[in-house]
Image 1 (tube, protein in one colour):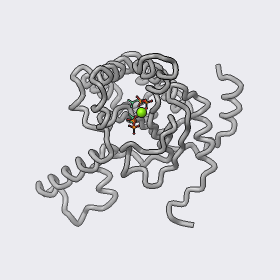
Image 2 (image 1 turned 90 degrees about the vertical axis):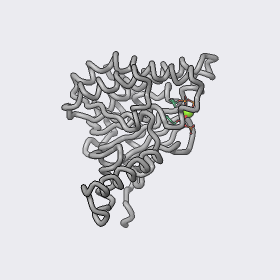
Image 3 (image 1 turned 135 degrees about the vertical axis):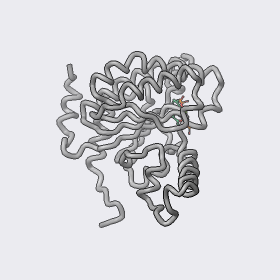
Length: 247
Ligand code: IPE
Ligand code: IPE
Ligand code: MG
C-alpha cells in the first residue's frame, strides 16, 4: 500500500522523463549508528534494508540501470572487523533478495575487481550474476572493490593488451571504444547521481562516466533514505536543463 505522501510525489513525476541510469553513493551508515550509540555494524544492517527498498522503487519507476556503490577500493583501509561485516551483509543481501530480484527479471552485475573479495562473498556474487544473466527489466550494477581510477587504469591496460594482440589498432581508440574497456561496458552514462550523508564529493565513483551526470546531494544519512527521498531526487532532476555543452 502506498502512503498518501508517496502517491502525491509519484504524481509529480513525469513518466516520460525518468532517468535511464541512476547511480547512488550509499553513505552515512556509520554516522547513523553513532547518533544512536549503536555499533557501525547496526548502521550497515539498516543501510542494507534501504538497498532492498530502493531497488524495488527503481523497478517500480522503470529505471533501466541502477548503479550502487557498495564497497570502494579505499574501503579496505577500514578495520578488518568492519570489512568482514560488510562482506557478510553482501551475502545476506543476496540470500534474501536473489529470488525476488530474479522473479522480477532484474539482472545483477558488478563493477570492480571482485576477485579480491573473500571467497564466500565472491561465490555468492558470482551465483547472483549467473542466475540473473538473461534478465532484462533492469540492470542492478553493484560497485564492489570499485574505484574510478582503478577502472580507468584497468581499461588502459586491457586496451594496450588488445593492441599488442592485434585485436584493435591505436587509431581506433575513441570515446566509444574506451567505454567498452570500462567495467560499465554496455551501460549508458548515469543521468542522475545521488549522494546522501552530507558529503560533497565523489569518493572515486564513476569518474569517467559522470562527465554530464546531474548531481543530487542531501544531508540524509543512507539508513534514513526513504522511497519519498528517491522520488524527490527524480522530481528535482526533471527540473534540470541538461545542455551537454550546447545552448
Ligand atoms: C557507507 O557508510 C557504507 C560504506 C562505505 C560501505 P559509511 O560506513 O561510510 O558511513 P559513514 O560515512 O562513516 O557515516
Ligand atoms: C564512499 O563512501 C564509498 C561507498 C559508499 C561504498 P566513503 O564513506 O568510503 O567515502 P569517504 O571516505 O567519506 O570519501
Ligand atoms: Mg562514509
